[in-house]
Image (cartoon, rainbow, N blue to C red; front, side, top):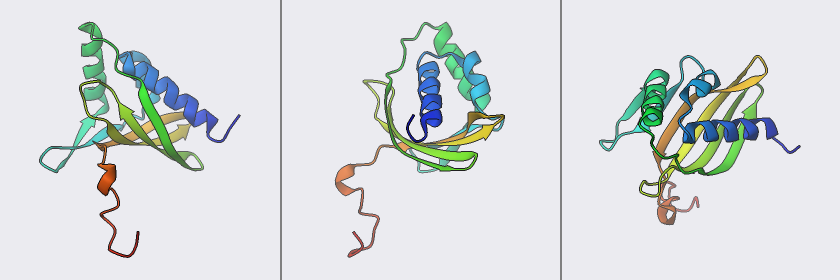
Length: 137
């Protein structure tokens, strides 16, 4: 198997369960202190707790919501021992904007678990290098 195959398998399983709102199965895939860090429209950072996320998934499941899109591209995985970060492109709806995800993982008892997730709007690639000073590009 290729590099990071165990992490890729974890990400596939997590995406499948999340896209179908299977909160009870997902619970064990997250650390107890898991949080989703989101950039708000006001430019602040807010945290959605694990329990808030799981409750939202349960509500969507109970309401019969259609599954989320499975569109996802893993752009990079950095692994350092029992910790890793997966950088991903993710689109969950035809009606919503894509997002940039940084999923921070921890391996405990031989299994990967999500420790936190950072979500920001997908950058405009036409000017994505504009944060660098002139002459550095």
